[in-house]
Structures are given as structure tokens and as C-alpha cells.
Amino acid sequence: MVDLPTARQKLAELRQALAAQGPAALQTTATWETHLRIFAFGQLDAQTLTDGCRAGAIPWWEPLAAKTYFGQLDDLRTLRAAMEADTGLSTDKPDLSTTMTWGSWPCPIVEGLPPALDGAVLDQLFDWGANPLIKDFNGGSYYDKALHESPSGVIHAFLSHGAPQNNATRIRDELLAAGNTRQAGEIQQALGLGGFFTKVDNRTLMETKYISEPGRNSILRTVFNFGAQRVNEVFETQGAGSAMTSCGFDDYDRRAIDAARDTLEKLGGAPGDAWMLDKKKKAALAEPRKP
Image (cartoon, rainbow, N blue to C red; front, side, top):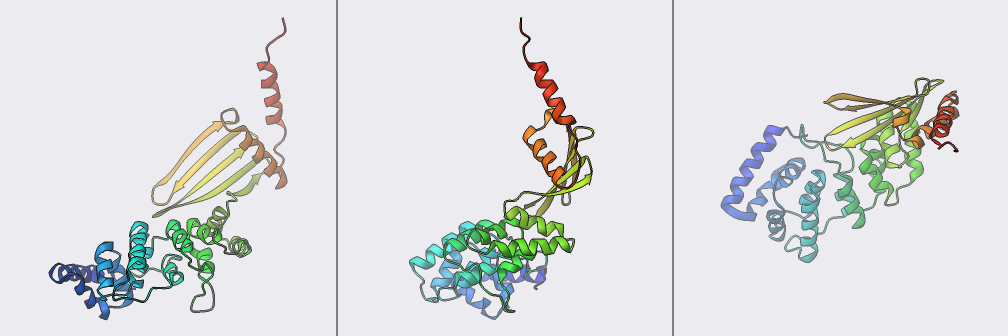
């Protein structure tokens, strides 16, 4: 991993060289370590990188990997289209399966700058033919790495392009058994199965949903209290505290309450029939009286 001050200093030097020499200056990066080149190319515009590739100063795989790492989908598309139109002197087209690996799991190359892990970028690479089951250097797969460490958007990209679902459910269950509910929640969300349900007591059910967003993670806990006939929602955002809302059953979606009641019963709870009886009473009161 490269330290950020060094990476920024090298980038500044490269920008000066580009201003003086044009794309040929990119040849000076050949002696840099790989992670430093990927960082630098992630900060340069697609046209400069295209010119450098066509001039033979750098290979196409490096800017494509950089744009994948930093989640720059528009630049990635621009570079790939340019490469397909005219490779120039850099005639070796990269294997996009390898390009995909730069954005599939959280392996930082520069201190303080983790990969974007953008599911839309992976979707595009898979659409272009990247293999979702490519192996890593240890004989495992990047799909398994993603299941263990990546957000739901990345996992969903793998799943929607042929990666086996049974791997996802198996690893989800292993993570739950190990107490890693956050990553299990990422897989659950990628599978489109919603949140996890917990029986708090015989008359209370809690649903927990894990929400991944760029740069932060959030948790939504919805508590259905059948004794008090209230729903409390607690939204916790990483680094930003929490907020709670509360309302009675009358002001909440009835289908969600009925589904929660069924789930609580399946988990061994006893929500009782007070909610159902109250619904019937209110429905009867709402009926117009006969003259």
C-alpha cells in the first residue's frame, strides 16, 4: 500500500510533466510501483489516458483498472470505446475479468483511499464479458471475496451475471453463525430477501435491514410491539448518529403489520389477536347504520 502524501507528490510531478511533454510523459510511470500508477491514472482524464495508450506510453489495462477501482463508470466506458476503436501502439487488450477484480473487494492500494466498490461498474464489466467466477492467486474466487467483504451492490452484480446463489446463502449462514450480521445483511440484501427478523419477546418483533451507500453504512431497525400496538423505527447512520420515529398501528401499513404478526408467530411468539379484533371493531364502527 502506498502512503497518500507520496502518491499526491508523484501525481503532482506527473501533471507537470504532462503539461510540458504531453502524453509521452506517461512513460515516466513505468518505473513506479503498480499501485501508484493505478492511483495516478484514476486522477487523470480519459482523453489524456487514451492519448497515452495510443502513443504506446502506457498499456490499456492500467487506466481501465484505475477507473474500475475509483468507480468512474463514464471514464471506463469512454476508455473502452476508444480502445475498441483504435488501440494505437498499445495493441494488447486487457482481459476484462482481471480489470473487474480491481473493483470487486476492499483491497486498498493507497492509504485512506479504498476502492469505490461500485456495483454499476461491475455490472458494466460483466456485460462486456468479464467472468464473475475468475479465480484469485490462492485458488479461491473473487466472488467469494466479495461475499465476505463487499457491499450488496457488488454482490448483486455477481449474482445477476451467473454467480451461484447457493454460495451466497452458504456464506451468509456461516457469517450469521460467526456473529457477523452486518456482512450477512449485505448478502441478504443482494439476494433481495429483505432484513433479518428477531423475536424480542412473545409480543415484539424486530426487523433489521443493512443499507450500503457510498462512503457509509446504515441500519434500519423496525420494532413491532403488539402489546402496545406501536411501531418504532430507528435509523442509524455510520458517523452520523441515529434517529427514531414512532407511530401506532393505525398509522402504519397494515400489510407490514400483518406480515410481522405472521413472522413473529413462526418464530414462536404470541402476538395475540388484539390487533385483529381492533381492526374488526373499527371496521364495524365505520359501517353506515341502517335507517
